[in-house]
Image 1 (spheres, rainbow, N blue to C red):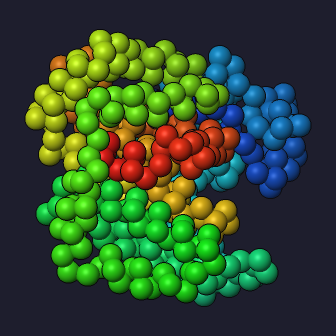
Image 2: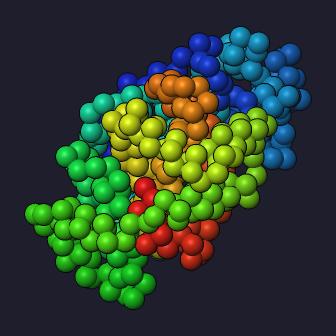
Length: 380
């Protein structure tokens, strides 16, 4: 079994009651079967509390005012206090650590929905390195696993990650090239010509490919008048999603009113001043976000056959976070790492931690002609 993870992964430590948010509120915490069985056998007064505070049909902890029934007033867990760390369910033991599993491979990451993890990811100033370790554990092979597709996806992802970490080029150019690569790979997959993927990758790796792509991209730049409605339409997808936390609609609505409420001219003027003030930091934050989304989700296309959809989901998330950051900067007059981490973890909670919401975003981005490649690229 191979394990792949970002170089900062092992540095994470939960700050518990010192956290400005809590992972024990705002969503249902699902309990694994082994923990449910253990809780059902717990005796005494605390066993009675466990029995009465679990939704046994759904397999989750009950919530009161949106908070887990075992979250105390200090932001600590009563199960941990009463029964020790070994009694925590799988979700509580692992979060915010996230695992994507493939045949013989486990890819480990930290979830942006945890504000402390978001601080680490966004606060990482150097390009992310990915480490690999191996153990002797063997997993049963999946009969339906398409290993050939998986190898091409991992090759494409490595190329994208290399492009994203090429800091001599503007971030928008690097991201646009990743989108184009995803588009081209999807076309070959759709036509049953995946055997041509290596030649495609070689073309994107040639010396001078970034400069050549920049020249082609300049020929299809959107005018300011076209960018404004595109960004608004992109945000309209969020309105279709089921909110997971009660304060999200109001928080998002306020920022979008600041961003769009005064019209196109004010939006573009604010964008120019924002980029002048926060450009270098925004580039670094955007790089770390895109690397995170691509590493975490791109190879999942082996199960759905949608590499281009995964890249568009990543790019759209970065683009929306860039614009929400602009609105927050306009509201507060400044934007630091703490504010960006708070914004990012709020977005992540709503989009990443609902399979339905994440699938909806990817579906809209791939099915709606308004989000075709040429309309998407120049808006980054």
